[in-house]
Amino acid sequence: MSNPIASRPQLGDFISIVCFKSVITGMEEALGEKATAIALIAAGRTRGKNLVKDLGLSNSSEDFITIAELLNRAVGSEGTRLTAVDKIAQAGDVIRVYCSETVCTAGEPQGSDRKCTFTMGAIWGALSEITGKKLRGIHTESVLRGGTHDVFEFTTVE
Image (cartoon, rainbow, N blue to C red; front, side):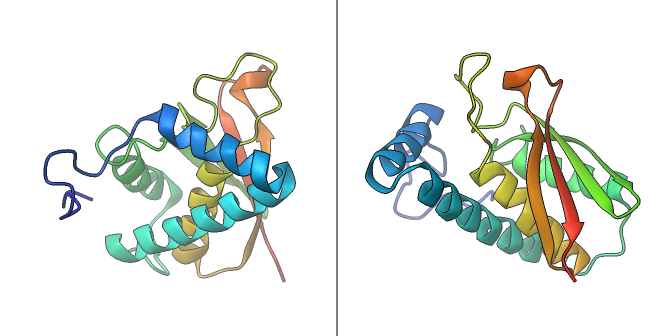
């Protein structure tokens, strides 16, 4: 994450949210919303799994407070700036991840039905790699629809 991409010595690793969101809307125009969501979630999952491998957290026994801090460092303001991971909590067999300032909801009007696809996918892939379990994820609360956070819920798939 701290290594700039070699072919971009001046611009480094980052692009604007405007450009990233243009990729999303362009994909939606070309592929449709559902196919785009599937593709972005899959891309996010790959990113999350690779991130966790790079951090050395695969099959980690760390508690969720520590994992939230490590993920926030990697994808929050000190890292790639994808989202802030504010909290991870487990209630029974459900793992809830509370994120703020997600790239997916940035610039969207209140009431928008925009879902966090890439962001949720990245958290999904990270948690799957950390726990060593196959998970199913869903975006349950949104800052665009009255929530204080974008909340992603994950359950183990048997």
